[in-house]
Image (cartoon, rainbow, N blue to C red; front, side):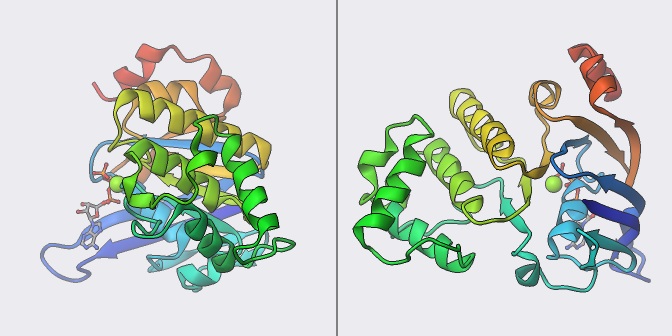
Length: 249
Ligand SMILES: Nc1ncnc2c1ncn2[C@@H]1O[C@H](COP(=O)(O)OP(=O)(O)OP(=O)(O)O)[C@@H](O)[C@H]1O
Ligand SMILES: [Mg+2]
């Protein structure tokens, strides 16, 4: 469970250009919930995600993950719970290193238990097996540099790497924004499958209202640093796709 309690974050505090990016949000996100966040540019979505991840620390309020108060913990100290995928396929992986080496780094970063780190055969086979589940044929390219892959392929692999450990929370900030529609579709379906398979608690920020409609078990709309709408699974499944567009009218 992620418990966000009356969290506030302002930038340029006390100056003429102060922005109250997150302005007193409280949310309880239960285990296995897949929360989709929509909202206009500048409504505070990324700031909220950064507050959960710890790359931005709050001015006031608290965040608990599984009853641990993480409010003051830096992001790297939250990585035992949290994995994160960014908008750019170039973030999160090393272009010059092979797919296999990137998986090795990911395993080291998260101190994956029971995974023998090193370029030995067992590790290689395990990585190949995991990559094969994507159904993209990338298991035959594990010695190829990450930088030679398409954005969609990279994003799918980044997703897989990010959930290899026992992390419980997956944060996705517009993971498909830089991708063509077909690759975006592959990445969204991969994310959805991994979230279900690994029973992750997930937060997805998207401007793609079709994705917001098709994925997730709850949807919130943010506006000016606040939660304007909050629909549970039942209310969300009762939505018609046009309803989401109407929210932005
Ligand atoms: N590091 C920062 N310094 C100053 N202002 C910031 C900083 N980060 C965010 N802001 C401001 O806070 C507000 C919320 O930004 P945020 O990035 O959270 O919005 P967003 O909802 O993710 O927008 P988008 O849909 O464009 O990604 C914006 O006005 C933004 O300019
Ligand atoms: Mg953003």
